[in-house]
Image (cartoon, rainbow, N blue to C red; front, side):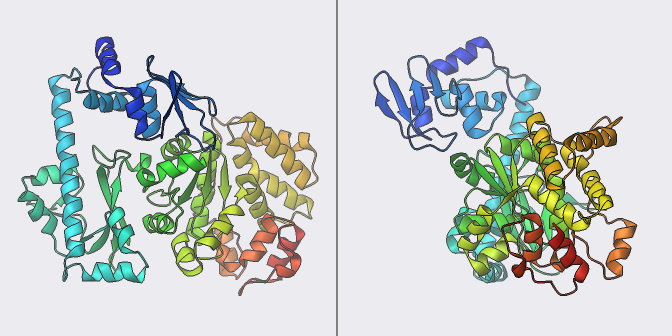
Length: 500
């Protein structure tokens, strides 16, 4: 809980914090007359358009048209709320903000949790580097191609197999078990007698906030334990639905490129950074949330989704698309030939990955292409089904200009009257309080039977070759001669792809 910021305290902070010194940590500034200027930290540019008026304590970028005072700068550079920015600046200025006794107690408890989490990072690092205890985790990292520099930068660690190693180590440092439980590090036993470590025999990925403080951990099992990937539960300092793995390391690159690459897993994001794709983040699982999308929107002008090529990954990507449309954040889609980003980078190299990023297609092109694979666009009924399937996606678009363009594109692609598509959209959505979300990953009974009978399903992307899918989704980019049916795909798949 934050203290109250009175007008007097706010003015005192303004007087004590020099904007030029503050911004110099992020921008190389040069004096230009009465002002200072440099390359804007909030968008990519080659000619300096970021200006600071030191006397007035104001900044403005003539490129992206952003501006404000010290509070605005800290909010934007750190993706902080006003209260968080005020606290950051108050600490820098040595100004005490007014707090009630309850607020002081809550802030103290949060600080203790942060210290416990930092101590846990140190403990896990020690176990990883231990000659004997950490050998199994180091061998795993070596097999996965994670180098020492990446291991150190991302502060990777190892949780030993024992049930209370972390508990005992941190208790000797003065952290009581109840506090460790509040930080998501230990669980109370079912019997009510004592606690046990949450992470055991796992490779540990510390999850840091935008101030580089550990707030949670992700653990990858090093044996057959389930679940294979385990994240900390939500705590007073960790909200999973608002946190993205590696955003603290990626934010500067995201701002400079005005683009964020979104992957599924922690290892995917880590490998991206190791191979120079430094604007990559992970969604801490397959279920991206609107809160996470809105966080990304504060940093990037567009997103590129690179999810796993399996059915679960493709279904998760389809769900995520709707969130980006609702948030009015342009999104592109990369269809991997197989596997996941980590595997592709390690086996085919970063240039292959960059080539796929360069070939990313806009979300609506992808959705139209996949719908055309599921239904025959040569028939009237097929075109009706395609339009009906795309209604939720078009209806979820919050930007009216983009929605109108999607309707126009859909009508032209399938030789339909634009008014008819618009009328179908209105009739399908009439009476609904909000637009429907993208379909869930659970297959319908009909689709399950179709799969059991050896039929084809677009969600089962691995049953169809990458080039066949690419030909259907992006007509003209690949020739028909490149289409090679995958094992298990019948002639119907080839016919559908060719018909698009």
